[in-house]
Structures are given as structure tokens and as C-alpha cells.
Length: 272
Image (cartoon, rainbow, N blue to C red; front, top):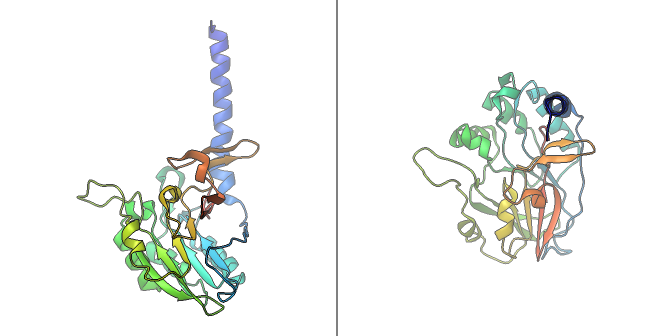
């Protein structure tokens, strides 16, 4: 039996816990310094003729005030360029959600032109995320491409690796996108995307959400994703409280190997 006194203690304890968690999530974690994580990942079919290739991945910028202003994006761009990547990939969610946790929007053109300063010999390539579509996906795509960043939606391109051998880069449309007048959620077309790959050169695929990896065929050597933020919110000594994936913690963060496939899920540039 729970007495009135015990009930009040429980309620008080819960309130005491929630306030620090909210404070940490909204005010402390977003202000963490930039952290660069490095992985060495093999891609099936990638041989000596391809040479080593350095890929820089930026995901989930969520441009907004005060957490991700243009000055912060400039810092991310400078840090990324300093790594001298051969190829730079943007994995979506440039627009911020959660209006109650921000004081203002960053205009699309401002964050797009900031990201357009990214540099790599093999180019900078992007896909869109669910928040980009919630805010107007076609406009996001237009602004990025006007700034000089090509956006890949269910498309594939044949590129040349640093060693001279070819490989494919594919970009999948968002799996959670919603368009006016469409009842179906998601614009992704994995079979249609893979149909554009016309030879057996190694294939790297960009997708905003990692859930697609569960149905990824062996033909895709490496899948690169964002969206989960490595879990939301990720508390010290506790870990991630929520992972925005129907697979829970399975694809929360890091390098995941299943069968012959490999997936790397980025924590994101905005708050975890």
C-alpha cells in the first residue's frame, strides 16, 4: 500500500530527477565541444587499386538559435575541412525541429551557404532528412543545390577512388518523409536506387535513417546513416533514453556489422 507520504516522496523524487535531466538535455549537452570520431572500415570489393579513401560525414546539424547558429556550423565546416577528406557526405536534417527548445530559426540559405564551404576532391554530396521534409523538402533541396551541394534522392553516381578504380555512391530518399496529398510515409526507393548501379564496383550508400539497413542487400558494401543522434537524450552514467528507430538500440550508434553488410550510424552534430 502506498501512503500519502510515500506518494509525495515518489512524486518529489521524480520531479527532482526530471528537472536535472531536462536541464542537461536542453542546456548542457548541446553546448559540448565538437568531437571527431574516426573509424577504419573495410568495404567489400575495395582493393589496392582503389587506394585508401577518407570520408568525412556530417549529419543532423539542425540549424537553429541558440544551439546551432551559422557560427557553429562554420566551426563544423572548418573542423571537417581540416581533416582533408577525399569525400564529404551530408546525411540530412539541416532544419531544426522541437520548436520549444529553440529561440529562432536559421534561414535555409544561411545554413546552406555555410555547408557549401565544405571541400573534398571527390565532392560534397547530400541526402535530406525527415525534418527537412517536414519543413519543405523540395525547398531544402533547391537551396542546397543553388549553394553548390548536390542532393541525391534515390540516385547513384559512379566516382573514381583516390587510387583510380571506380566505386558507386548512392543516396536514398528519406524513409519518414511526408508530402502533401500522399498517404504513404517515406519517399525511399531502394530497388530503384540500386537499379542505377550498372556494374560490380564497390557501393557506398547514404541514408538518413538507419532502419533501412535491416533490408539492405549484400550488394551494398557500406551504409552511412544519421538520425538517431546516438540516442536521445544520452545521459552520463545512464546512456541513451530514447533511440528514434523501430529497432531500438540495434542501430543507435557506431559501426554495425550484420551478415555481409556494414553500417555506420553517426551521432549527429546537434544535441544527443
